[in-house]
Length: 253
Image (cartoon, rainbow, N blue to C red; front, side):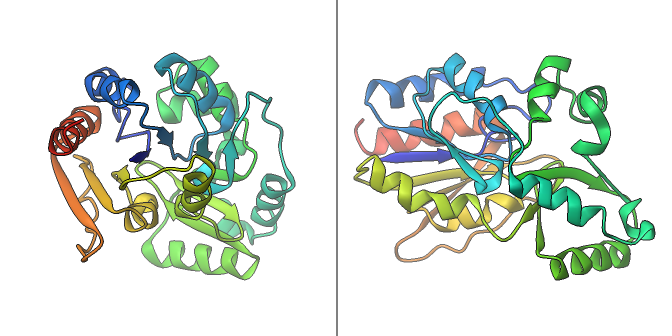
């Protein structure tokens, strides 16, 4: 058994960023040496201290599949992130002005947009692969924005809070097989998420857990012969705990 989990709105509360309600299930997994793999839009600089705090040994999927965190290394801008910013700034002013990315906000602006403390916002700004931000405009404006970016090789994913731009096409799901192979994981692959950018990862799992998100309608995942789908009736870490505890009980763990 191996568990891949989104963070914001899933393992972490959407507003307070607390994981406390999930700790009973986290500790049961840890006691049984079942890996917990964060899969998030967060940066390596954000995820490393959080993993240490919770006691997760890694690895972690960061920036929506842009990279995998395997060691505590300082996060530096990569060619991917620099390319996203370069292409973004090539847009016509009428489109560019509608998108405000983390690179436009600075640390204090990121703190205000996310509700994070300033030191955490600083880590959120250490982008290596992707650029989260907000778009202001009509549906037609957004469609034109996305189509123009796509023509420049930039894709976008909608998360629980931000629209995240990346160079090329990669997802959290792309990293799942390699991590399972590296860790020699046996038993079911479990994935938990609450937002559209979790869909591919949930569809790659044998047990897909859709965590309730009170701020939007959530996502629907098709149940298949080789994929079981669970929808929690509680949001965030409380729903996370509920679902994982139930599965562990079912497997006698």
